Image (cartoon, rainbow, N blue to C red):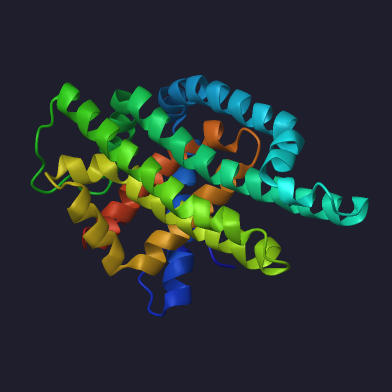
Length: 265
């Protein structure tokens, strides 16, 4: 049976590299579970941010019927069956868009709130596998500014991609099958870019460098990010698994930059 370490081993082929990305997240989860200190460091800021976003998403769920009716005035004169069907589809599309934006925005806000905590988690993972080559000392305020600026850009991108996906959600069959998969892929990519911010910054690399490095091994980055995205959709998953995602993102950074992700002898 494959283990998370096996999944993260060097492989070729898009499917194998995608699974390797999933394996990096599972390895991050393993590091997290075996390190109670990491759990305590990472859960507190996630709890604060999680409370805000759970409340916001619950509000969306509560008003989704009214919002769906507001967005489909053209269906007011239709028969009850067709009107209800269109508004159910609109409601599902709204919830899908809300889920995408909530996961990306939650990650962005949590990384800003907990920047010192997640920086420490990432550093501990780096130390386990040989440290950070050519590390750059990044002052706390500079790190916070970088994290906030990058997060605003990525949330903006999630809106840019999310609106067309919301519109595509009205297409029969495709909107209920293909669109959710595309949404998970888009969300996964944005999370991979977002979560690797700290380890790339520690190496003196900025957002364009990060995107270029991840694009060079896109299937692995998508595998990691999609696994995180799906887990973050589980109730309390984002809060409890945020430190594991940070640990896995550090492994992803090391992998795409050609640095060791296995402990030495």
